[in-house]
Image (cartoon, rainbow, N blue to C red; front, side, top):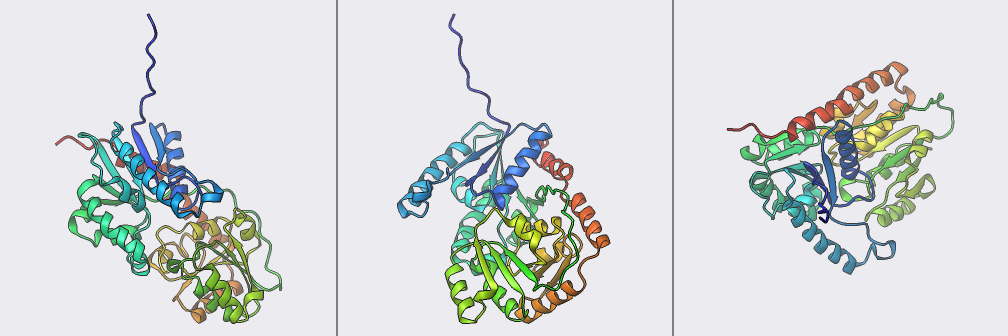
Length: 360
């Protein structure tokens, strides 16, 4: 008798991502979480809605339209799969997936990384997406997981129903031992900014800070729609010789190794990967004051926060450079991060969130 071939069984839990490349932000969080859950023995898989485009077609409007249409089809397949639990990674996946209903007896978890009131206030496009998706979180998601209390607070403020189903699970943060750093010399301070050059990141404030930090040199790792205007403004203010634009780069660890401080001017922070990466490298941080930056700095991330103005941030920078974190400060922050973002703590929280709901 001819053998009957069978398809491999679907994973019990499927994390649905909008894209897998580039691996940063929520994509990195999803990849790290899936890997950690697999290491812990959970039956977990991942599904990507949009494959990476060919480099030559990356900016093509037609290519983007086709990719969006394909992502809708993939989202429908993901939602109608027989996986007992589907985890939707981010609001953009929710936009594509939540219009489709899941089979009876299955669960949908929305994993929110991006929503804050500040981000909605600075981006009309994001505000529109949130207006469409947050009601679907209330109606279609069995649970909502936020990556931080900052995101959870913004979601809970929507209404009681969303508040009741929202919990917080931090991202996994895996750190290598920090390389040794010698004492600062008398060379001009080297500052590093990491992140997208877009309105919510407030990159113009970097130039205001630099104008009040004589002699400092700013390295910018990241790109985005505000880059041309930022370059032009740097030239107009006579700061262009003191700014190096590195674009999107995988050399952030090398740039951190040479930096005296990481400067962070974002209007909204949902988790704080850039701040945590600096802390892991034992580079002090000077950040604009937001709820999430105040949660991280200085308990988990050595450094200082200040109001979002050039003079205030420059004054905080001067204090940090004059009295950088001590070895004891760094060790305490290292230990605090290990407790809060450990693989064991995060996978345990996810295992509880993914467990079948008790029968009523």
